[in-house]
Image 1 (tube, rainbow, N blue to C red):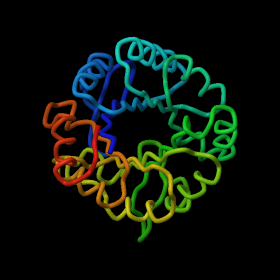
Image 2 (image 1 turned 180 degrees about the horizontal axis):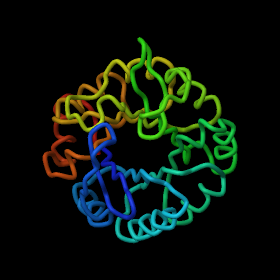
Image 3 (image 1 turned 30 degrees about the vertical axis):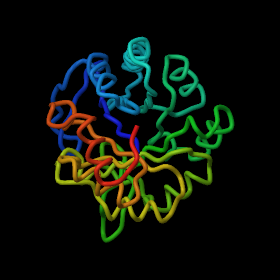
Length: 246
């Protein structure tokens, strides 16, 4: 079971909020990456939360500097819309690339990326919220509906060539009340892809519950950034529950 710290990056700094609102500074991304490398994190995920064209070079620079300092796999997302975007991020040092809004706008780009670089490079980042008795895909930090059923969307992404799903619960994000277990179970039943659970971690038992619900990896941000938990504590909790960790 993989334990993955997530760094939401805005203009070269790590930020964190609740439900993607009221963002506050959480530190320098390269310094935090070094901390998590020392804690033996399995991977790191960088998400450019603004992803405007003017800030893209900032993201490439952060990825380059991080790849020079740490030697654990890096997944980078935010503003990815084409094969060329993926190519630039891989050249900057990313190992995998997450796509969200770009895939919603043009789903076939997932097939193009998988054909060019292989499915192992492509991560569907799905920002999901509850609405009228079902789960829907959202954009703009969970504020806008994409008009897509989240469970169907994840299954479609698998057919188009995605190699992994980063499942973000927008309702649980930053609350520290636990992962959305119903969401994890529903996506697990619809796809065989490796599933990363994101949103809501606040205690070691929350990570264990997510794995029990069907996650292959667990991701968190604020509990790691603000030293409430370490990667090692989460791994110890998973191991105690009987799940293999590195």
